[in-house]
Image 1 (cartoon, rainbow over the protein chains, first blue to last red):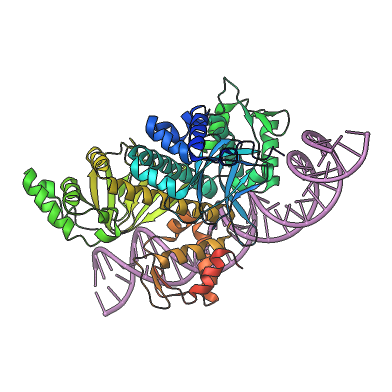
Image 2 (cartoon, rainbow over the protein chains, first blue to last red; image 1 turned 60 degrees about the vertical axis):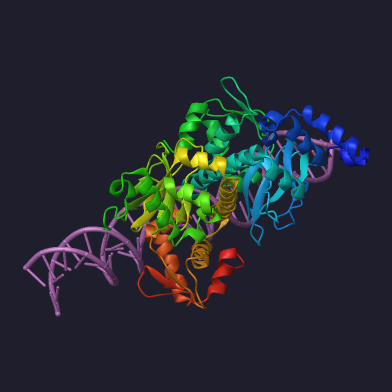
Length: 252
Length: 252
DNA sequence: CGATATCTTGAGGAATCTCAATACTAGTGG
DNA sequence: CCACTAGTATTGAGATTCCTCAAGATATCG
């Protein structure tokens, strides 16, 4: 239900020079630059990256990439929420991450996507052609270093999630999820953080290795205990964040 | 029950020059070099890496590193099997990977280990001081590129395992595990691969998010179906590897 | 204000876990 | 060489968590 492609430099400005200028100025004004991998580049390097970027918009529920597809572009989220997931042939799904503003997705030097991605809300993304991006990676050690760092962070996050999926109870999983949402940089809070949940209960379930019903029941019981408070179901107040952290950590 | 530290260049040869020479010649003769991250380095670069390496031995069941410890060294497995895991305060454990010959562990530029590691069998490892390693990383783009590549492989493997932990049945998990063991490069086979299982049932369970009893029961039922055959419990023959692959993939 | 999605709640069932007993294996000492 | 011991694996029976299926409540959007 978003507008279709409000920004598309390659449509509006076919000349390379103008596109370059346009893209650069847009990237310069980018609000998520500081949070993003591209924040490490400066001056000339940043301009080179901005020269190969194009913009893409997706409606809520729209598919972005599919596991196994040719990985022609690498993507960076400007706004909105994206789920990335793997699926089994019979339809079972495991969501392996939610991406939001500033998050990068895609592996340079890999021919095909290893996961599928779908927009949860309307989404704006930057797209970088894989080959051009690879060239920049070779030229700019800073860029490679940054992506390496992001990759190692992802490994650490993945291990955290393996612990959750393999060994935590439903209650601990839901608490862990809420705490992680509250700790996102995009969710700066004062004391009792208010957390937005753009994803459905079924998506939370597919992320936590549970069913929608179990997620719902668990949230209800946390609500009954006063640990969380909810106004509409897509926004929660974590009334007792520290208690939630304890539950999440398995400290009974 | 292995000998304690049969190779320790820094003890035997205190002079820097001799240690250098010693280490280099040892690294040149290294059998797992081709499988390892260091295989990408040549000549001068390789010598520089060899100059900072020391050797470490661990007995079976001995702890190698502990989650949260100061990460003074990065490690590479020469021989034996290592488990890396995360634990909850009440003792629940999730094994996030098994390492064998040629596998690297440790994240440059990270102050502390994010996981614990323990030897399953007697283990020989190379140790690289983190700071020296970091310097080499800055000097040799090839090395950084290689570790980046390993890191992205790890992310992909972790996602695979999240799918397993979140959405596969016990039967599918055990089948996936056996297939993965058979597909290891160290386990070259002809038709019906014979797989060594140096880890206990409890460790397999901690890797698959199950209990020891469920792993045992599942192996028994696969055995009754003729899909696997076992002589001693630490070695299995995958009589019907293709069938196992189907089970693992969830293709019923 | 009604239609459609999503969410919540309920009741029963299934897979896996827990607890406990038995069997195997390898290493040890007689 | 064989019995013994300790660790590991297997098997069994019952408990529990979470899932499945189904109905009802709530929210969203035209």
